[in-house]
Length: 106
Image 1 (tube, rainbow, N blue to C red):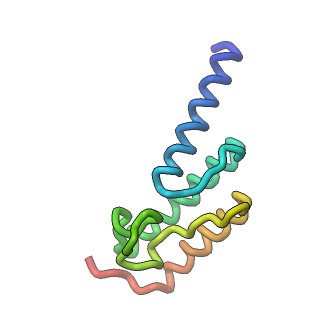
Image 2: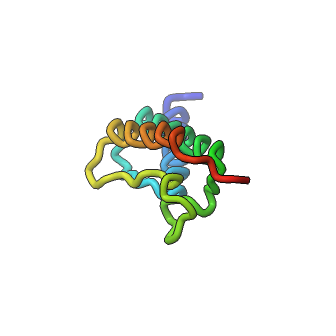
């Protein structure tokens, strides 16, 4: 693979990660670096696993839902101008907070 192909592959991967985040309702500006986006996607996936482990429904308890079953299971919304690192910390704190939240019955 030559340099141009590598650049194209990285660009496509970055676009894919950004798209996956946007589909989940996560605000990304396009100015984020590849490592930041990858770390953000990992944090979102950790949060989603914690939600599922506590009986949450990701189809209902998401950022796009008008009426989630449980607001604790909704991913925190990224604040305007918030750095990726600060947002990841808030996501991880929210996931940790689910440990103290009652589990939903199946």
